[in-house]
Image 1 (tube, protein in one colour):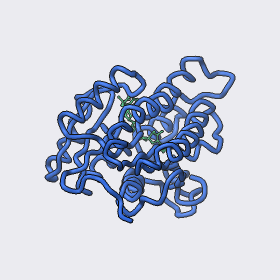
Image 2 (cartoon, protein in one colour; image 1 turned 135 degrees about the vertical axis):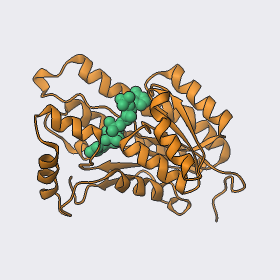
Image 3 (cartoon, protein in one colour; image 1 turned 45 degrees about the vertical axis):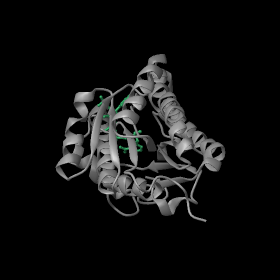
Image 4 (tube, helix red, strand yellow; image 1 turned 90 degrees about the vertical axis):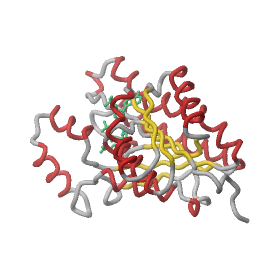
Length: 257
Ligand code: NAP
């Protein structure tokens, strides 16, 4: 049996947090794969570089400003994507923040902000987009978890959110499978982005030295780059990955990054 779904028109993907880092690389990769891509980030102007890179390569993109943790903004963003690009059938919940601290120093605000973006954000985005997927009888959801889901000192909030996203992913797979929708999570290890640069700065480490030290502890002996994650997203949203659902793929150069 082959999967149904629109084959006569360009499929539309949404990548949240697409202004930079893993999200920007993923948006560009999905555009190369033939998707029209909505690049969602907090501030619409911050999406310009990603949108321009996609268009310069001959792709179709739309920059949309929205806080993924705000229900009204999410609703408006998804409606705009559906109107201007077409119904979104691929969703990559990538937007993320860190507010690291040891538990005894972690504030309520540190906890709430991380839950707001990762958990509430992925929930709101997925709830808004799934109606288009269900209607089309085809869809792909990819959630960005992390090796921190297995526990990480100084990240009680982030580890909890990233573990939560794994449960969310498995539940989406159970509920949406009968509508032709798969849901999977990617759990990256150490990836060189603004997020990990900020971590190095916060702990007073030189970036190059920090990368070299992290790489030495990774079995493949290098730090990850955004393209490593974009490549995995590309595979999971592909037509041929339709029998993979509810899985967590660790992309960490080894069992833990
Ligand atoms: P990044 O460089 O910090 O990029 C994250 C993007 O998300 C930023 O453009 C940020 O916008 C945006 N964002 C933050 N809050 C948002 C909100 N409420 N609504 C919409 N957009 C929002 O991060 P990254 O390293 O590429 O990470 C991407 C994802 O991978 C995250 O979920 C992260 O937790 C996960 N991850 C990263 C690593 C790693 O080593 N880098 C490892 C495991 C998992 P602003 O710049 O305006 O804040």
